[in-house]
Each structure stands twice: as C-alpha cells, then as structure tokens.
Amino acid sequence: MANYVVAITGASGSIYALRLLQVLLWSGHAVHLTISRSGVQVLGTELGVTVDLQRFQPGQLFQGGGTAGVIDSGLEHYGGFRPLGGEISLERLTYHRYDDFSAGIASGSFLTRGMVICPCSMGTVASVAGGHSENLIQRAADVHLKERRRLIVVPRETPISSIQLENLRKLSEAGATVLPAMPGFYHGARTIPDLIDFVVARIADQLGVEHSLMRRWGADGRSI
Image (cartoon, rainbow, N blue to C red; front, side, top):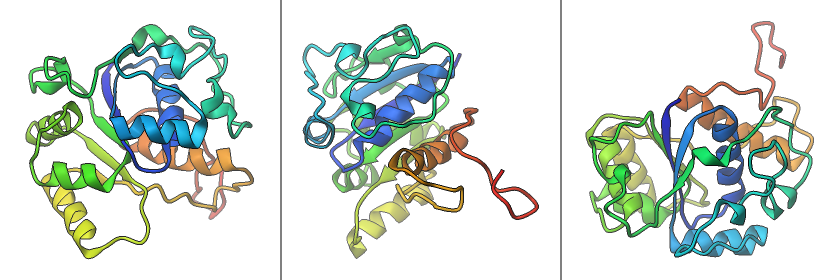
C-alpha cells in the first residue's frame, strides 16, 4: 500500500478529483486528501456536494463507505461510470485541512509515491511555480518537487495567457508533470463519464496505478 496525496483546488473539473479518489482507494492505496476553500465552492457549484472543511467526514463525498457502492451526488451527477468492482475502504482516506502545516504531507520525511493537484487552479499553479508555501497544498507540492517525487498538476483553463504558460513551463522544468484535463475521443467515448475516465486514466498511468478505466490503443491501430 502506497501513500498518495490528492489536492482539490478551485478550477473547474472537481468531478475528475472524485473519480480519482475512487480509483486510488479501490486500488488499495492510502490517500491523503486536502481541499482549498475555492475547491469547496467548485464542488458545490458543479456537483451539489457540500463540504465542511472544519469538520470534514468522508461521507460528505462518499456514500456506502466500505463498499463499492456509489459516490453520492458527485459521480451520480453524471451517472454511468464504469464499475470498478470490489470494495472501496474509506479507512484508507485521511483528510488534512488546507491550513494544517502539522500534517505529515508538509514534510519531506513523510514518504509518498506522488501528489496530484486535481483540478489545479491557475492561482495554485502560480503559487507553486513561485515557490510559495502559504497553505498545505502549496507546501506539499513544494515538498514533492524538492524531494524529486511525482507531482502532477491537472489544469483546466482556456484560453491560457502567456503568464500562465510561463508558470506551467516553470513547473515542468522543476520536475512536475503538467497534465491538462483534455479528454481524448479515440477510445470510443460515448458519454461524459467516458471522457472523465480518460483523464483520470492518464493520471493513474503517471502514478503507476493499475486500472481498467479505458480501452488502450493497440499496436494494430485499434483501441483495445
């Protein structure tokens, strides 16, 4: 079982984060979750999910904890996601408040196999690229860069200004993987969940987490 960090910030696309959480927990890994204040607003606006950052409980994101039962209005908002099978244990989900610098993930001595900021707002991109550590999300990202661990940022913005492009370039040169939420269509996408799973699948690939979220392109030129 590996430790992974997932941070949800205020960019559009919070559904990607919920599906990623489900996949990581289903895979048997420990997930350390932190959410920004803007991330809470986006969760409410896009998915109707109410999160209390001061008194967070996994049930605010999940229902039927300990089963493969379904995530509440988050994933059900779109419906039709590919079943993962097996159980999802919420015991492996640890929440850290965005301003709690005593959390283990604020230190390089706390070992993880990677961190994903999904979705990643351009404000967070700028702060991490500038070396700021004004909240736990920025500090944890800074730790992953300095320790040469996987850091994946998933921006969802368009169009992108030259300032934003420069910040993304800085992150890439510092060792982060910039993985924009750009779904593909070559895998036979038919539904919104198919498009969401495409992006989450690419994130999981970068983390080295096995999954069956999408059919892969085969050597014969067909999706398999």
